[in-house]
Image 1: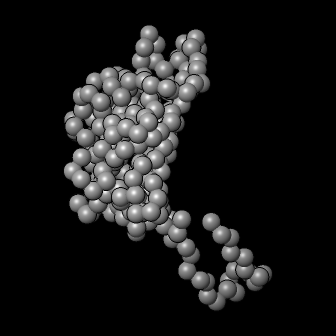
Image 2: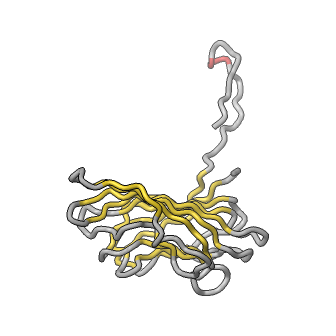
Image 3: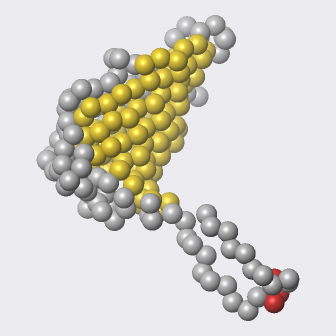
Length: 208
């Protein structure tokens, strides 16, 4: 944010002030899960904007709760009806358990994709189903309407999972949809079961 400096010794002497810049993060759409098979954002549907209006889009995950122990994942649509855009990705994660007995920082070879049409996992361990468990995080999608470049995305999640003791997991995923066709839809779902509850918010980042 740019700082504005006035030379007047007293603010009361300022006769006019230029309009302050508005926020760069523009709300577009909020979806709230209720035993939902998926949460889908489709350009042109239900007021969703996912085109050249903004160069960067960000999805915010808020208290995502799973109905069954499963992985939270994302798929991208490139003009068809399926969320099967070809992706190449990388993933790593860190974890620490409540008992202070297990820690790790590692590349997740089982969660990356190489020219795959499968959904991309956004977690490295299944979400817990305890009442107080859940996932938060965000995913950035860059220039989805480009017909020249591949479509890059970056995601970060923090979530509660349960093994012998509860764990805090922090997972980082990045990659690209290897297509020069516009991405016009993004879908989030569990690999099995439903998204029991939680909210996903879509924003556009202007002037970026």
